[in-house]
Length: 501
Image 1 (cartoon, rainbow, N blue to C red):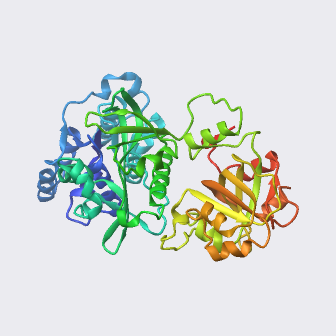
Image 2: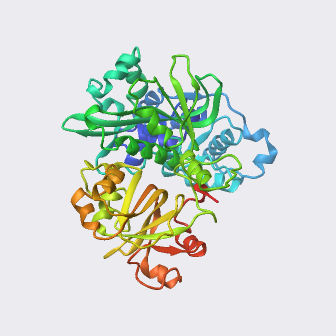
């Protein structure tokens, strides 16, 4: 990518004053772009040479030596069609400006950065969107970087690779499996963003995603994709097993793919005897595609269907929800239910929900149900309308009084009274302890095992639902709603790409 800098940018950057913050930010972005180079037009150098202050001229010329010089360029004066689109130049500076713009028009350079409003106005009139001021350039070049603005919960942090201690015990197996692990890390990962959960100077879990474009992936059979997310490192420390951090890492990987408009994800893995990873990822739609030259298995997954889906029964729905998670089926073959949940349980079960107060629940996340995708809900509702595959809309009661989160049913059990039996069903998924479960067993207990699919973009408050005829009374127990009312709730609150119907 060739980026041409106008004279005013050069003077701002290379003079003896403090560099403006936005300019420094722009140059940092440019320096991090792959295969990018900054250029100075030959005529810009000629312009600097006209500076009557010889000392300043000499300093500016010396600093320009660090840039590539565009000394071969097309002359706009030879292009009458282009020339006639511009006002008649009134000075030599106007001619230079036109030549810079023409370099963009003829694709000699990819972008021109300038703070000259005259150039910007001409470019806008010509429809040349590659001519940018500093702030526009920042906005533009940021889009060349992966979007890492995902929901990390309070425990995870976004860090650079060079900030991580690669001697941490979590990397022990990787060092054994991959020759040159440290060299790979220093050359490939040190300048890359990653996501890590650290506690007491130990790494509990780490995720390193990488966007690959037009990649011939090392795999048999052949695997080529224009754009795909690779999970380079997906690791939970031995001392942190059982906290459902693997599910949390997967959710973060899915969120990363969604944030960057990527529909497919893959990872490679050396199969092990006691292998926790393969059952985990298969539960969320990864399947073995092939093997690479190192003998690793290559697992692939889509998060948006790219095929016509035949849905005959509920088992097809469960299979589709698993294969394309977090996408889910919400068509006519499933019911929709409002599920009331008290604030204290909501905070524990859905700590990743960011509501109108724009705050995450500040938990230590030493609780598996906060990290997990697979969750459980128990109640004493008399309803028998919920079935596998149904859609659940969780409604936080009391002060909030709003629908916040959507999930899909994996299994449901009715009429249970044995607290220990119930606890065995839900122990890894629930916010309830055994004593709380026992307190529910004075009457028949309903257990719903479900996947959390999405938090709504905007929580839907009770008053909104009442005004839109979605409900006509307080939501105190599980409430079945028809499809039309359901659609009103999710409208503009769920990305339709992830809805299958």
